[in-house]
Length: 297
Figure (cartoon, one colour):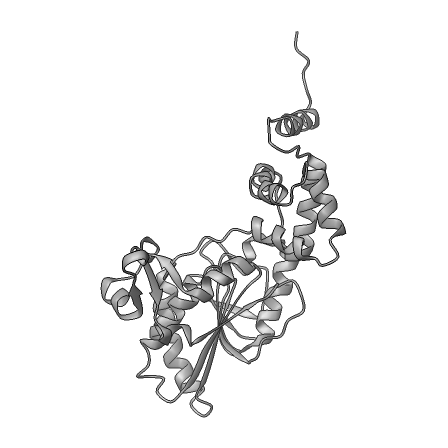
């Protein structure tokens, strides 16, 4: 008769089975716990137990590239690297960068139809507008913001308006700064918009598009870790931070949202992801609906 395992024993047995998979490199639960602790300390992201295989898949490339024998050697390499560069490589490997042009289109519609006219009235004396794309990934969001601003040019004639775009991942920032994308990545853009704001590649560049300089010149790209000390050049009128805080625990969310409030003008707007909420996180924002918030305190 087989032994009956209690809940704790079953979890331990399942973890052991995961670790015993045939893999190119030995990867233990101890390795996983060390690496996710490092990533949490650096990024604030809470990594759940079910990300064990994901960590192996993405970080085995680093183990291979460094010519190491297993993940214990990789953990030692991360721990002992005086430059801290490998921690950044680790973060680049495990952060998810799912994005698209005009993702959650209602946000850009609200920005165009409601927010820009309000800012135009409220900032009439300074004629200045600042937007921050926090967690900009490969650039689709800030370029969508740039298109929205350029299409509002008649309302912003003579204005100083710019977009700050930041991310912790240096690799995706390099892609964003280049502004070159496979044509299929632009499926969310209408044909007229695509023709107006992008160059289509020919010859060796067939199947690629490049954003036009009039968009690129509006955006300042820079690397930034939201968990470290930072102060944006402000005050800001709008912050887009979508599908970022979902990865943080409640305390980290509250601290980050409070810092957003400190950098936003009173009445400024914060846009977050469709599965995110500030309910019981902050009292400094009021909900407008559709994951759009306005600073009230």
